[in-house]
Length: 344
Image (tube, rainbow, N blue to C red; front, side, top):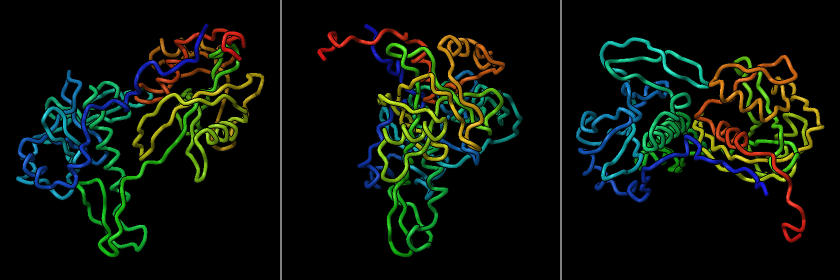
């Protein structure tokens, strides 16, 4: 008997090895004592970080190259194998040139290169990094984005200063403390109700996306709303399709700028003709498992969607949407369990 599909690997940006060591953020003596042996992840003004050619780890810097003590803007990322890791702003050193590397959605993009280092984007390059580097890069970018928006107090408007080595801010006016924000967003793979896992998946594209790019539906959780309720509402609002049997799959941080993507699957009657939300969704359609498999085999090249004039490219490797679609594509539709098989 076929079982409902699950994510068959960890989403790219959910990988991490570093112990965040929350208790150390309140232990400045210990952190400063270990600063001389620490390593630093540097991010440029576009949140890119260096990687050496042929390697799959970030090119970190020695902490002492930034001074004898952690600078005020340093953010403590955690500990791994006896080393502390921090994050600081940085930029390519010496003469630079532009070189091509992989970007988001599988595109090639130009990035700066200095010596044997090129500065890569997390969204486009994250899946090529090892687990430690992927986790460090994701955390560093999430905190960088939060601090860019947390310079003034939400209560009185006064300036804030960093405390707890980057994991909180304190207002210089009223003393209010604030901690990094993460906005929950659902992302749902909707398949038809044929068998257990369906034979078609509902895909859509936004008007601002590159031509032919399709993905599963997603949206932010509203105040006072359950995750399951958000799934039902967002799918209905964006495509006009009513879903049922909503179930959780997994999650992934998405620091663009500060989301956590909560992955779900749901079932729907494929006789429902999708109606794209005006101004938000350019196209929505049911796509067969065979076409999804063909799109993955094409490795970023557009493939035709059977029975239509449309072509399709699926999400890049750093997105949880990619893992959701790959897991569904590798599953089989199967047959639904009979009541006597489940004890009902």
